[in-house]
Length: 197
Image 1: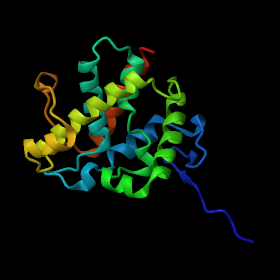
Image 2: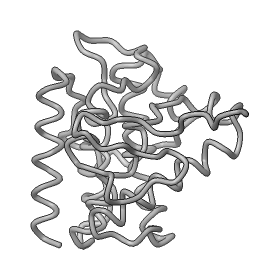
Image 3: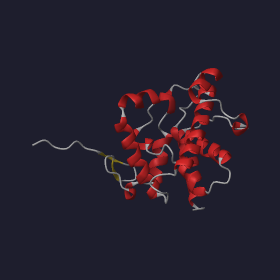
């Protein structure tokens, strides 16, 4: 008799997260912050002493989203902070790999995102207009990362991510910090946003 393949992961919190059927009760912010702080964006192909983590990227996207949608309530800023949260268990794949994997990756990501949103008091699915604003902030962040730490020229980054509004990026710089510091910053920002829900 064949046994089902294991589809869950044990978290440092002790939770067992079923990747195929995730439930909000098995999701903890400590696990998300820890995982994202140790997941490198750009497959680790960035300049600097530390990898540029998904947690650091998420903090930047939330900041940019706040500039784009300055009147947005805290819950949508929280959605921006959590926009890549499923990557704490499925990792960060560059876009060409996601395309090669196909729709199954997107379905897995969507199920995890819904459980994460519900766990922190958000609707399972973010409204389309908010999702578009978060995507815009994500692309601006990607452009900044590409030009500041991933070796892209500005024209090359613009070709892939679009031309960002310079005013939205004013005063922002990519920072590379040790994972432990990024984990702390992510948890602090999460707590600050949760306090306003």
